[in-house]
Image 1 (cartoon, rainbow, N blue to C red):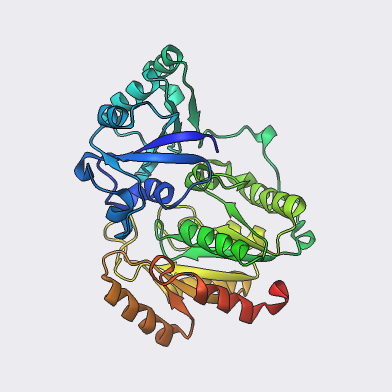
Image 2: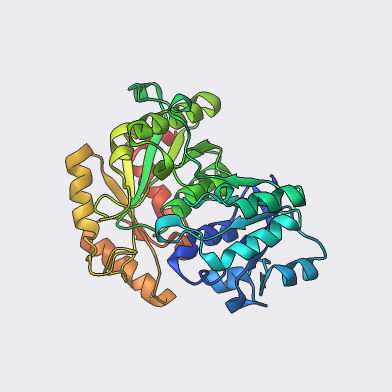
Length: 354
């Protein structure tokens, strides 16, 4: 664990663009999260706001209030937003500068590199802090080209894909990995985005910050690294965007390079348009399944339900409706738990769990 942290999510915590903060509230092995900054929810518990279940992480009005109530400045300020385009909202820059002057290091997964802001670099130097831009692109000499070595990996590989961006692919993959490990089935997760890194994923890379020619190679390298170091029986691969998204990178490289044995597909039933693209109707489960089948012949073994915009009762009924419509187990992992997904994998691939 790197240290204690506050998560900056001002103005975004109740939106899909707050998904990085959501992930950190749900769990991280990299930080001890002491609070979330979003004045709209000051005084409330972050878990209660997010899931309806308190988690002991308070929400603060601003940085000064957090430092005053905590009695100290934590080690890190983590940028907890993922807005379209990945730019730093200008109102957040003074907060980041103040944190650096307090001696708090700042971790950011945005495309807009904090190290490109002279005032932030100066503040870091003055406070004895550091800036870590997680999405800082690697140079080609530091990247890996695809070698076609996936046959060496004898673990069951499960891709967790979705019908849109920001639907819970990483969350479900992490839940399944942790549950199988708790059951004594050694599992690893391959992170493919900045939030997975911030949550402490040991293996992976940031797909949308990688030169396209090397995406397949970096994915293969991460899977090989997980296999060679840990010999897991199951490897979950976090999806990005979706196959039909008009504006985000999707799962083509994951299906092609990772060569998964199965797919779990996450879907937000109340969402009618692609996240960030009004006027672009969501294609949905059947279209994604057809593309997956045409590209890889890999079976979709279960459907993850994202309960955005639904009550618990509506989520229950929607899961039952999806099961009847698609002939697959369906559940919301946050409300219903991981059992249906694991049962589907055990039934389809008993040898991986023997």
